Each structure stands twice: as structure tokens, then as C-alpha cells.
Image (cartoon, rainbow, N blue to C red; front, side, top):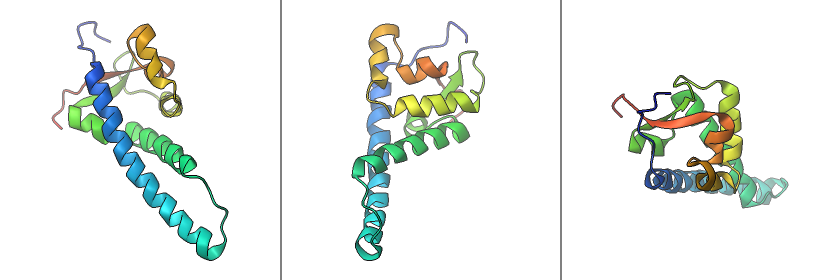
Length: 133
């Protein structure tokens, strides 16, 4: 990673959190409503909304970042995920990143090393994209 690469500010990360969480909430709510239809009419096992929310969050983060290197919020701000060396992260880094991203302690890493735990543990960085959105 080039040491002159500008770091992503906390405000940008908060915007990512807000935009992605709103999108994930809407997707999870739709899935939850779809599942409850089957609970009511076909006697499927009821599942709490939190399970849908965190499952949707994990799939959303993993798939978008694995395929496109960014989520819709990162497209909005012109950022993308790269490995510490500046290349494309491997699939295990994306798996770690999505899993830690869905924990409640992920953002506390900002207090210790200036980046969230999902960046620290997956050995990845968030940088500004050179390609137009």
C-alpha cells in the first residue's frame, strides 16, 4: 500500500454504515415478511427478525465486496476494498471481513488503530477508487 494514499475519514465510514444499514434493513424486512407468510399458512418454524437482519447483512457485505469490491454505499462515496498490498483481497479475507463486519464490536477498532476491526482482522483497507462511479 502506498503510504501517500489518503485514508478514509470517519464521516465517510459513518455514511457507509447508515446507507448500507438502511438497505439491509429493507431487504431483511422483505425476507422476514416473505418467511412469515409461510409461517402463517404452511406452519414453517418462526424465526426472529434479528436472524434475518444479520444473515442479510452478512450476505450483502460478502457478496457485494467479493464481486464488486464495494457495497452500494461505497459506490456512493467512490471507495473500494483492497488488500494491504493494494491488490484484490482473496476470498478468505472477504469471509473474515463480512463476519467481523456483522459483529457489534467492529467499529471499536477505530479507537485503537484508526480503522475498524473488519479491516484489521481481514488485513484489508478502504481506499478511494480511481475509476469513475
